Image 1 (spheres, helix red, strand yellow):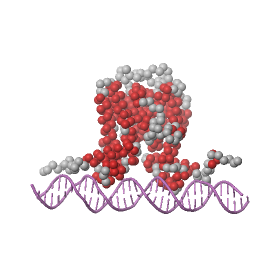
Image 2 (tube, chains in turn cyan, purple, orange, blue):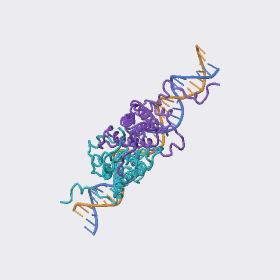
Image 3 (cartoon, chains in turn green, cyan, yellow, orange):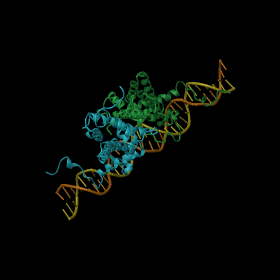
Image 4 (cartoon, chains in turn cyan, yellow, red, brown):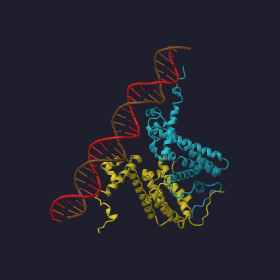
Length: 220
Length: 220
DNA sequence: TGTACATCAGTGAACGCGCGTTCACTGATGTAC
DNA sequence: TGTACATCAGTGAACGCGCGTTCACTGATGTAC
């Protein structure tokens, strides 16, 4: 009996192509998105042209253009996860600096790749889409690792185990970070505070520090 | 001398058309956007088909499809302004309820017309675009009336005149409202708090109440 | 008041273009004997 | 080791489609005399 199973049926990459062409397609699409600023500039023929292959060659790797965009988005989420982790580890010593570094990395990611960031969160997914029909766990979890990094940073800062409170805090912080990043890109004419100032305001107000959990929140 | 000036050169509407057709075009485009969820479903031929006119008839009112989208966006901003004002006036008595009503109206607008809302703030405008070339004051100020309504509601709540502090507070609140509204639409699988709960959290933490301006903000 | 004329909002046919997709194919790679 | 064959990633030509845009036009409306 030879090594015959589902695993060994996979084709090996020929002459460096195969798996590599797939990556080149995704990279070309990501480049076109960031250069043109328009996700509809990602066309099957356009991508093929940029990669230097014939248009039908795409079909060996993606069944349609939506699949390419999905791969671009998935790659961007992986990069975001990595960026937040790296920033957090670089400032692991001090909980306050740690949280701030993670938030700062989030804003930097959005600022440096505005269009990829926009496509990550700008397309409205249907509510039941991921749950019904095909269970696509990878897609369902997109961004959850980054969010967990944020929850961890928040709970370290508040000096608690990750719990409901740090989840609520991290949600509020995420919402504010996303709002700042996307509005700043969409409405550059607004007199925005710079990101350092904004981060100070948001973290100070949204995240409970360690110690007694009292908070002055208005006179009522 | 007859009444000859720039004003009187304007054509009068023929048989109810003219100005009315322009409105029908914008309404059809807005409907297509909200129905399909895709701003690129707004094509010149598609809009003409929906209105029931020949495609070239559009050119009498818009020079290109981008002009139609711009009109849809401008109309949406006017509606948002109106909605926030109306909600504020309906709850004018109590400053806390007033602010909450304005924020609630903002979230409701985004929830009820998710795609129009997305297009309002989802397209990245170039930084110098509005300032350079053609000065388009109307476009430059899109959304500023709604923001001013928010600043006013915040300063009433904090019991101050609109100043730098209420501007900062309103900015933080806007950022959070936008982030919540757009992320909820983009990532419906996330376990979002409902909007009442989210509003309570955000207003409580981001807006200073009246009275002594002390705030507990962590131990450092 | 009547008539000839100017205006102009909207039409219908036609165009060239880039798109996604299909199809039979090519030719290098890897394998069975 | 050598040879015939199977595999399959990628090709090039061709298609039908919806698009934006042009052009000469139509026909109702309003106006000058």
